[in-house]
Length: 294
Image 1 (cartoon, rainbow, N blue to C red):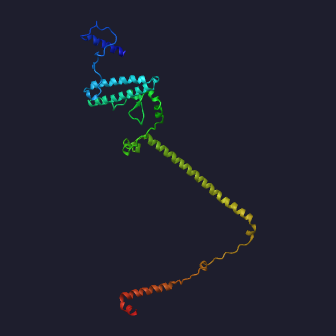
Image 2 (cartoon, rainbow, N blue to C red):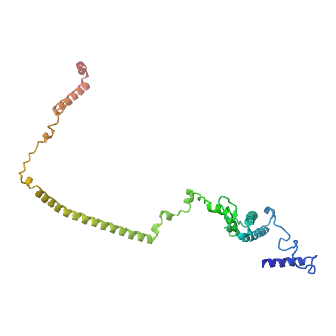
């Protein structure tokens, strides 16, 4: 339908020309010099920086997108052959690079920044290898010999490690539990859990006390049983009269001790202390007598 509207517009523009009227136009293919649209008889400039209006840049960007969409639809056909598919894929990548130049020019002229926006156009249909950034494969080009193996054996690089600043960037007080007391339900659950834990500990303590009490009751019975068994096993030993125990003097434990050094008694120690005190007093108050004795 778009092609029909375009053809009728071309025909109308030709008929309006002075040197060509309805009688001379016999139908068929229109000449290349047909004038239609806002940029009639103009080809897309090879250098985007030569265009100085945002409107014209937008026009050529849309023109590239239309051409890329047609080529992507064509490259879906795997019966085109390997060479044709490779050529189409190269042409699509070339047009996408040119589209990027027009987007840069639009931004430089004060227009929209298309590169910062999420991609919603034909670029989303392409698959890109991590080792060949900037070149994409579309449609049947992904299944070409040599390309499929690259996609299967491609090692996805690890994500860059975040810095400490990035890790703490979005942390809020909730992460540290500073605002837990503001939640009434959480406090209620904590109280219920605490009560259950206390009840459980009390039940365990009571069970331990019951076990200990039962052991204490069984202990004397076991002792009596052992004594009775010992009496039955050794009746002769118990029949013999026990010899009276004689208390040993406390000093008898050291009877076997032998001193190989003269140990001074308390009297000798007191005598030596008195002698030392006398000598110190004489040295202090009568140094002449001490010198004469020496």
